[in-house]
Image (cartoon, rainbow, N blue to C red; front, side):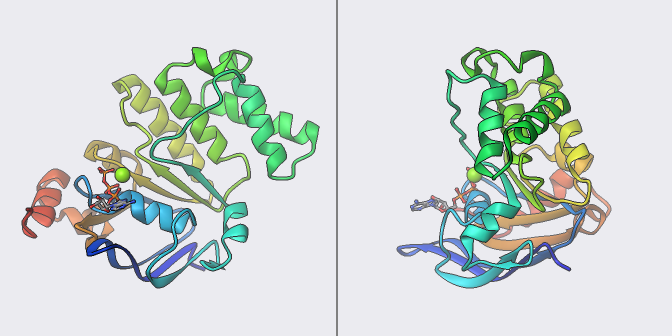
Length: 239
Ligand SMILES: Nc1ncnc2c1ncn2[C@@H]1O[C@H](COP(=O)(O)OP(=O)(O)OP(=O)(O)O)[C@@H](O)[C@H]1O
Ligand SMILES: [Mg+2]
């Protein structure tokens, strides 16, 4: 069964189509790289599918739940938003335990899950430190742990490696590789090497429209991903 199904999904702001008729489906285990130049509609797509925004056209399901049941979808997904904020005074452990409690976990269960996830994202030794003392990369990793607190069926990560150094990027990619475990991951990024390392599928958007959807091999053909990306997004012409 498809874990994501979008049919003619659209979001219009006045005369501008932030997303213009996106149709695609994803399966369990898919790690989808969502690519496109600035303003292509990547964040809009993620906000629609995570029920932060309402579409102006089209329909979708996530985890088999129709888009008009946002309360139920939110129980089954994990999200790292484009710009996430964190409570600076809390420790990483407190933050995650609280998130677990919000999803209905008991006190002990929330603590156990928080401990496990902090270890998995490489924050085990900083779990008891305030988030205000975390580096950007540590916060990104905390955000990924937060996105996994409810054992989500679908995980959305909006530019998870933005602003990270190469070592930090590699750590996040390793974490994403481990998330899989049957979940679907949708990952937006501008780093094409990242897509080549962790994604089995690529969706390319430009000016709100779908330009390509397929396996890495299908989208890339015989050249490189960056050549494919540029030819897919330049032919539309930008203003
Ligand atoms: N609240 C809003 N009001 C008006 N226009 C918006 C709004 N949010 C997004 N847009 C427009 O929708 C289009 C798609 O934006 P979106 O944030 O989805 O792009 P993106 O692919 O995530 O870009 P980036 O790579 O810069 O993060 C852009 O033209 C943007 O200006
Ligand atoms: Mg964006």
